[in-house]
Length: 172
Image (tube, rainbow, N blue to C red; front, side, top):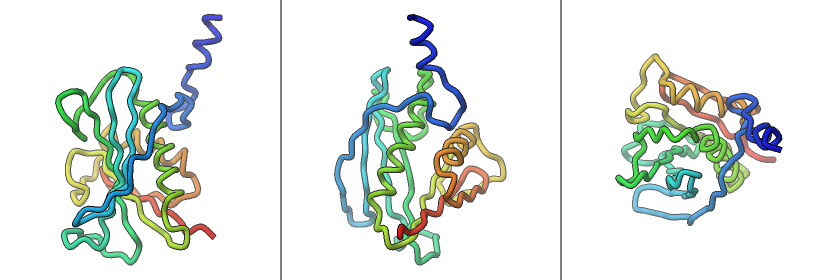
């Protein structure tokens, strides 16, 4: 019986979500003065609470993204007891399950978007702002790209260093 349980928790391939995912919940649709936001949260087995945000950045005066498409930035933060942080490396052995959970959340986010239009989802795997690009990918960005390329095979994915964008097609 012990071996059967170990097999059920076995990771088949990085990015295929075989690690399973945590229960998560959609919080609210929010609106601030600058951005539309869609928010989620979940808690890992080790008790770390994660906050996932999708922030609409196109049309923002501070944005240098020039497109007619709605552009959203995906950000997730860990609260390890020292406050919310996008830069904390938690190191609790839960990275694959956390990423699988984020992929589930991204699918839910895509389902909530206006189905008549294409959208852009941006994300970064570095600790620099999304508008900064470097030619080398961080380990975090390589992990993100592995998950995105497996989970969203039919979407266009563009990567420049530690920044990436995924084109979300209109639903017909």
